Length: 227
Image (tube, rainbow, N blue to C red; front, side, top):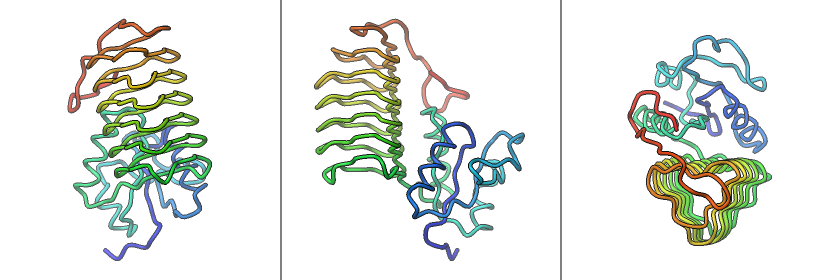
């Protein structure tokens, strides 16, 4: 396809997309060619000066037209982000890892594909981050954490040492997970909660200390799945 190095398209023109575009531009090593969004009303708009060009249905066609081989998935909702990640790979595009230059990441961190680490985040040594994880603004990930694929650590969340976060789980804004706690897949630690014990699969926990207050029953592949 004759791709030019550094050319990238972004999938997602919402607020999270704006933050991803900003991080890519701040890196200085990417030429952000355009944005895809499934909302046709956004066609022709611009996000930080970058045009919204087409819907995701034209992904492969547009990538070929623009000679782009890389894509940044800019969707905060875990299940949808995972679907787009898989679709992009099936079209032969490489999901890029986006690391804002103001983030601090130890060189002893293992990163998967398509990871996003936003402004002010800290990732300490021994941590493993699997594919398609989002570590949002000013989140703190201490030593020896394990973040499974397509989970999302929200702004200002704090994970102490030895924490494991399962697939598709969320840790909400300002939440704290204490050392060696397991946040199992599909679960949600609410904003400002303090998780001092393991969070069971699919549980929604809130409060200080966090207790289960609901269940998150949706699973990947379900139409419109949300927490």
